[in-house]
Length: 64
Image (cartoon, rainbow, N blue to C red; front, side, top):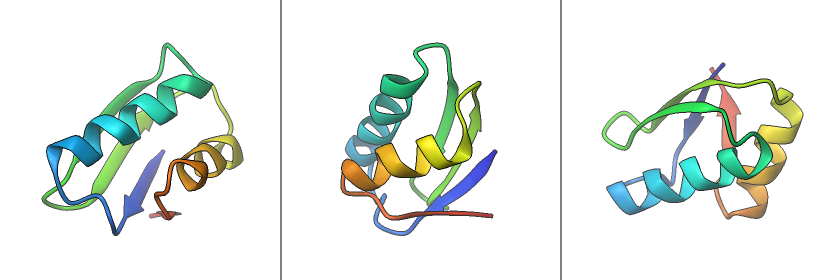
């Protein structure tokens, strides 16, 4: 799954995004790139669950 997060602008944001995703699926593989504001995720969690946990963490995400 690939998502875009407009307000992920730094490494700290990328770590927060990764932590939020892994709170839903501890085994998720997350590649967050603040420069492109993109995130690639390999997860067993649903897209809805990922988007919800990111929203709760303060990151508005959209699928790409």
